[in-house]
Image 1 (cartoon, protein in one colour):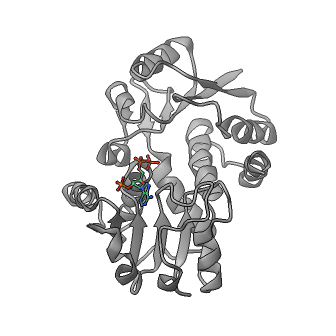
Image 2: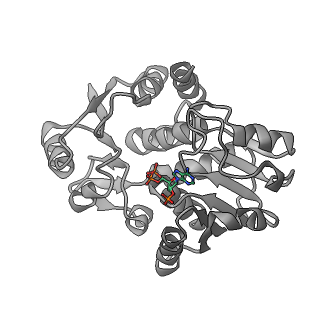
Length: 272
Ligand code: ATR
């Protein structure tokens, strides 16, 4: 039996175990997915121990995504963005990936969104960073709008300094309406709207040529997505991002095409 898992602190709320185990069951893979909660300064040690114990793969969440860089061989995207959320132990040192970044792209692709043109990403924290690098890696021009302008500018500079093909600008959140006029894609990568009816973007700024992805998945139908649908935009809820970071990890670990529908069903059952 293969063992996969998640390290984070805390990890109690994770929906990854049912999502991945639905995938194993569907593909007849003899494996389990378990959660581990090392101490906050113990991420790298946990990865080294997992390698010794014969664990096949780990997902990594807050606060360990940067710390584990020291004990893995990161792929170019994970290295550029400076965070790892998926570790594959088939090699020594283990390989590190960032499927959060790829998950954003695959969630949009699933909804037939054309990955070209201009994207506006609201937020410059961990989720914002993964989103920005994922989209810029696909050649998009990304305008980052953040409450704290300085953080958006720093993130944009780190995109420019890396070798991704797209470019980025960093601005204050007050500029979001102006930025959206010419935008094709909008991603909310802040926690605004989580368990609340707030939206990070005024409804009047949304239009029918946009695809809007909200990283918030509780509730699934946020005010932003409701406003976006009313404006005629394509909407993509936060569960798609969660799903596709998991799908991408599953495929890297097992070498098989993930049973997306089975994993989606298990994930959404946990969110209801
Ligand atoms: P995560 O890792 O989930 O991205 P984070 O690193 O704490 O979390 O980042 C949270 C993001 O949400 C930040 O971009 C934050 O803006 P600041 O950089 O100005 O703090 C943004 N954010 C949180 N609450 C917000 C609010 N009420 N309005 C606007 N932006 C908010």
